[in-house]
Length: 115
Length: 111
Image 1 (cartoon, chains in turn blue, red):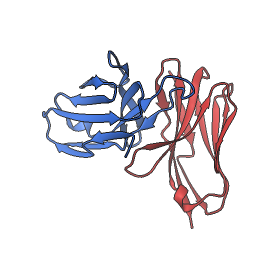
Image 2: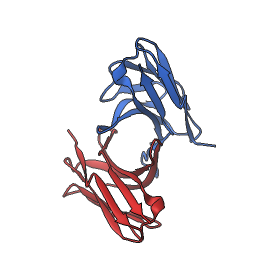
Image 3: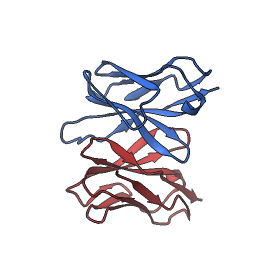
Image 4: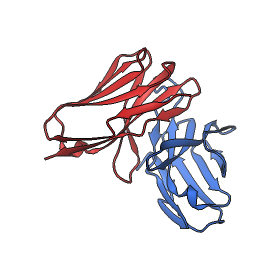
């Protein structure tokens, strides 16, 4: 079984709809991250969480919100989807303790299309 | 603001060739540097992580080096194979705990 899973893997939605992307991990890591990847722009950090009660904005958090329901679960919501949020979304995890030194491990991604 | 650059953007080599991928970063105050592989439409696979105090890390046919003072890292792939074809991403982590990614080098290894 994959250590970091994301659901759904693909999603097509319409402008204005609220959607949620979910991430679960079995690695026992304390830190979780959400990134988006756009062609030609690389990966950009949306939100990150160091533990259940510690959530931080990344570079491009506008239009997004997150919830850390448990150490193993971190969900990303688009409150009112717009076409320029069409992208590939990745969840990642890391362990802050030595010797892992925050090496990040990524999920398989969710391809989101907003029409 | 940290910026990470990877050159070239694309590279095509014949099978069996040894090759080097380059990564440069503007702020040398990094905590660590991580190399990833991404296959088309797929997630990122962590290849190697180098701490700021280290000079290199090796895993199989891969060797990554780090020269923090000059803001450079290289990923050396020995005896390349068609299965190595993918996009290779470099990312650095500074004191802000966030990874800053380069845009990647797309590698094609021809049989």
